[in-house]
Picture 1 (tube, rainbow, N blue to C red):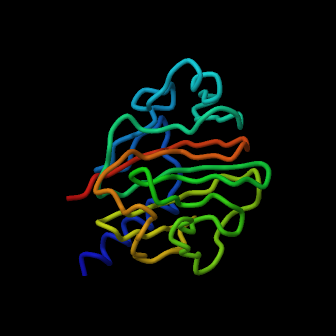
Picture 2 (cartoon, rainbow, N blue to C red):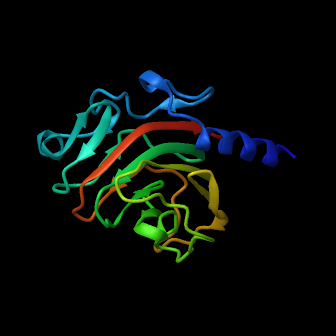
Amino acid sequence: MKRLILLAAVCAIAVGPALAGNEPPPWFTPLFNGKDLTGWKHDAEVEKHWTVVDGALTYDGKGTNLRTAKKYSNFILTLRWKVETDADSGIYLRGKPQVNILGTRSGELHEDGVMVKKSAVRPLGEWNHFVIIMRGRKVTVILNGVQVVDRATMNSIGGMPPEGPLELQHHGAQLWFKDIYIRELP
């Protein structure tokens, strides 16, 4: 029953409107303040390619991935993202596995070969919304209010670390992220 209540709350966040002023949902902490790269590992090189434009974290398709300064173990991550061209990108959880941003395959778990149950991605240029639940080695992915991966067990190459950074990954395409919030779980 608790799982269903949690899932219902997460789904409500997933389909709800974006909150004004980078205000996190109840019990969540913002990972991106809508103004700068505070909380993310960055240097002058990263700052050339990851900038903030109109409250969105904007990546120009060059340079390196962007990684949180803090490490996470079990969590609910919610964020909005968009691409304007067919892109191959993703979000590393604990440094791995990768939740793909890849057209109709968005939401799949790349390293573990976990495919989405059905595509829920919006057309190019529109904002999409991920809710990603990571507990132990289990990952659930909700894309635009549709559960596309259900408690898949991660067996990533080299083992699944108990904690690690979150990382916005890319393969050279322009990307946008906003409303990035996390709730750490026991």
